[in-house]
Amino acid sequence: MQKMWLLTGKNHYAAKLNMMEANQLVEEIKACLQRDQELIDEYHRMENGKWCGMGLSEHIGFIHWNEYECRYPVLMLVMPARKNRLIVSVDGTTQHSEGSSWHVNTLYMNDFRRPDVTKASFTISSVSDLEAAYEITCEAPWLSCSGQKGILDGKRKATERIIVTIDRSKMGNETEALIKVKIPSGVVTIIVDAKQPELSGLPERTFVDTYGYISIEAEHYHAKYDLGEKGEVIKTNGGKKDGSAETEGPKKAAGFQVLDGYGKTLSGVKVFPTTRYFTPGQRPSLEYLFVVDNPGFYVVELYTQPSNPVSPENTIYYGIQVNDREINVYNTIPEGQRVGDGDYQ
Amino acid sequence: MLNNIRRHASEVTCHAGLNKLRIYAVSPAFVLEKLVIYPVGKEPAESYLGPPESYYVGKE
Image (tube, rainbow over all chains, first blue to last red):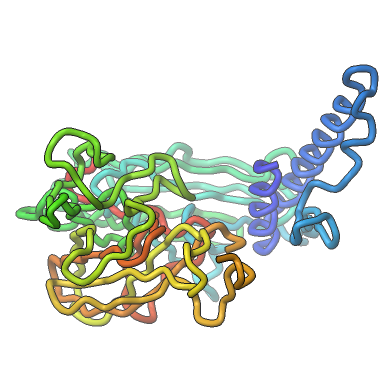
């Protein structure tokens, strides 16, 4: 099921760029639906048909609590272009080019700005069902590509992913290089920026902006401040496996704990006890460090779990503070959004 | 809610270089999963999971 929806997302993305790969993805999505039918059939045969008919109800693409108005994946087919065009796209971005000098023909690969990244990739795809050749050149001795030339035909082979590997020991003073991809409509130039951020003197767990934003998994705090039984503040540095209030050290009356594997990406960090409201001066907190290049106004967007609040006021408040200035308190529940039926006290 | 996440944005002032951000618990049932910080008007590309985590000092 998950595979089917991921393939659907890829199908829509490929189709919007007229990539012939979209049509191959359609077949893979149909195979997922076929597999669903096989599972239903198997279910119906089990125990001499004891559950025969139980799989007949809809179970894909619900938009309500029951099956009404549910929707199967929408599949997008593309028509092949008349000429043997190819398209180059930088993976992990929305950049793409067919190399024509009339249009965008320079793309940017910024993956290697991150010190921990040694591999990145771009993809060459067929836009037609005709044979089209590509040729890749890169003069920098510190970059290598997984392929140099090839032919795509939009049928048997509609796409080729090229892995770019960096060897930082060979860079010398260079931080930028060009990868040129020659395709039928022209040349696509990929500018590879491998300049590293300045990290000296920064504390552990300081987040660094290399893509124009900072994204932090909640459990990667620099420090957390819990409350002891007498209301005293207990500081714990990030990185220690101190998930619970029951581990060694001073006994805690309230504070944050990591819920491993909880939520959409890595984990959740939840405040305990689950019944307590926190007043100014007596609020557990999480501290994050980050570096930005430019001073000014920034948006801090918090991703929180979407459970209902514990009371009918429709509020889950949190406080936010930057650089020891004032604490602003906000409600995570959007104004006007009704949670629950209002009389569940 | 349908995306299994609740997002709340607020505006702050940062200086160039190292900044410190603190998130305080106020109500019960506050569970933080992720934080995304970007210059006003320069929101990262929309995605279901949010942008991948940035590099941090000491990351293996």
